[in-house]
Image (cartoon, rainbow, N blue to C red; front, side):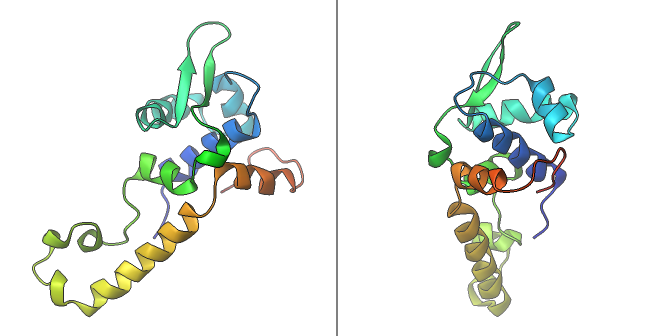
Length: 145
């Protein structure tokens, strides 16, 4: 499975909000500057994250975004699925009806194991844990996930 730019940037936006938890709304321009992501791209991601119930937004001069729940209550899986969709590496894992051979396919079993492993890792890490990991690293602008 290869994470798209949308998934990587969505996670970076959410991590930035987790790092700034309790500070109130964070302007998109500040997230963009700290993360090296265009503000335009973030403006495309925020509505998706808001519809998924992961962020809230405030308009106006002191506006911006903030997490809708505490970072300890948001898994990386929720974030990735909000911006990417299901994490299954092949369509037949997410939808058995996609392939007429799905019921008797050994390869599908392996792909299902891959999907379970990805879901297990992403579902087992919260934004709070990711933020704690980030705080242990040297300060850097534009770090990559």
